Amino acid sequence: MLQWTFASHFGKHSRIDFFPVPHESNRICSDENSRMTDECRKKALDQHNFYRSRLAKGLELNAETNYTAPEAVGMLKMSYDCELERSAQFWADQCTFEHSDRKHRVNQGQNLYMTSFPNLEPSSLLHMAIEMWWKELEEYGIPANAVLSDAAWISKGRLIGHFTQMAWSETHRMGCAIGNCSDMGLVVCHYSPAGNRRNHAIYKVGRHCAREQNCPQGTVCIQNEGLCAVQR
Image (cartoon, rainbow, N blue to C red; front, side, top):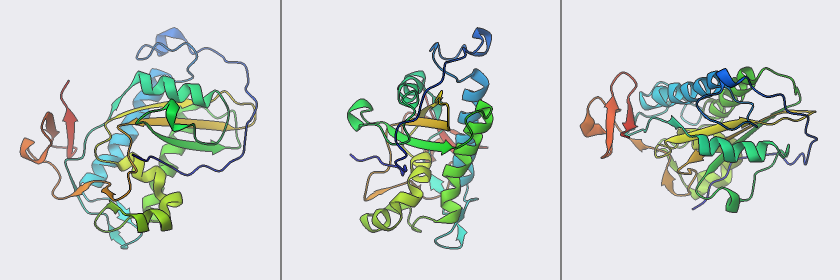
């Protein structure tokens, strides 16, 4: 099972001293070394689900067809996962703009984003990263059948891998982290179950959910979002 997204190899950067997040703004996850606040977590999650909802409803432009990408049936709604944040934070703290070894993130997809501005406000940095990843659909596109075939991966994998992981229908947990690096802003997001499996559908093409019959077993339809929420 493969999961991969593009990362340039800029190598190791230096780490700066950590400035703790105030306790009252960091209650969802308890990692003391995280730069994520509850506001950052909520914004990152909401932004992912906002885009997934638009994709499910057929509202996102697909560069490959010069038309909107097809609707998605059974697209899962994402939830925030502190364990994924913790594994993402471990890698972000290495200040290395390259992917971690898969043995350290079993069945976890990974998206990376780097900017040369190290002092950006965390929520702004996260927003930029997520926006850039999603723009790959509009800039490069996916096949009309939404299948990540070998041919599509060979020709576009390095260009669309961030988007396809964000849009992978079966992925429903995420967690993000920000590196404490002196010379760059670094965002790492981990996803589970991992996407980007070759010759599998990014999502199943079909009418977005308007009732439970359009959702996988064990999920409920959020009708105004067109997403299927996993029942806890």
